[in-house]
Image (cartoon, rainbow, N blue to C red):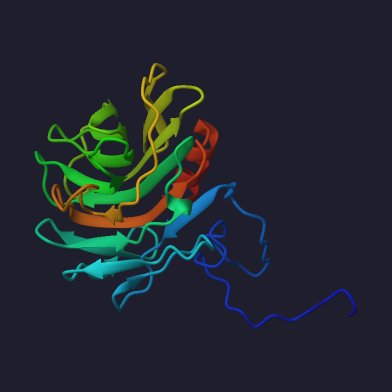
Length: 245
C-alpha cells in the first residue's frame, strides 16, 4: 500500500484539461499536448458572472451584459446575443504572446452575413498590436495579427453556416512568418509570407467582441475557448478536434 495515496479533489476537464472522458480505468495521461496552454475557458460553470481560466494562469473572465449559460459542445457554453454581451479577460502577459500563438474555440452562430468576433486582443494605435480570430462578413474564419494600424490577415474557405457547431483555430509563428487557419481540424490555408511582427497589447482580451472596442459582437454560442503561446501543429489541432467533437 506504500505506493498508493488519496486525493479528494474531483477530477474534471477543468482541472485536467486533457482528460475529456473518465471511466473505471482512470488514466490521467493527456489526450493531447497542453504545453503552452495559457488561457482555457471551458464555460462549464453554468451560473454566475465569472468564466474561470483552467490553464493554471488565473486569467479569469468577467461576463458583461448578461451572456447566458447553456448546453454547449463540450459540457456547457455561453450564449451571446450579438448586441452587447461579451466576456472580458483582464490583460496579463500570459495571454499576450507575440512570437507565436494558437487561438481556438467551438462556435455555433445564430446568424450569417455579418462579422462575429471570437477571441481578440489588440490596440489600433502606433506601437501597439497583437491578435484576433473572427468570422468575416462572407462567413469565413479569419485570423490576423496587428502592428500599429497595420493588419495582416488570413481567411479560411469554409462558409460557416448558422445552427452548426464548428471547431475553429488560427496559428501564428513570427519566426516562420506563418498564419494558418483550421476548421474542424482541417488545415484550410497557410500564408508563409506574413510581413509584420505584432508588438504587445495591454488591452483586455475580448471573447465575443472586437479587440480594440466592443464592435462585431458574436451572436450564438462559444465553447471551450483556448489560447496557447505557441503555434500548434496540424496533428495537435486534429487531436484536439477529435477529442472534443
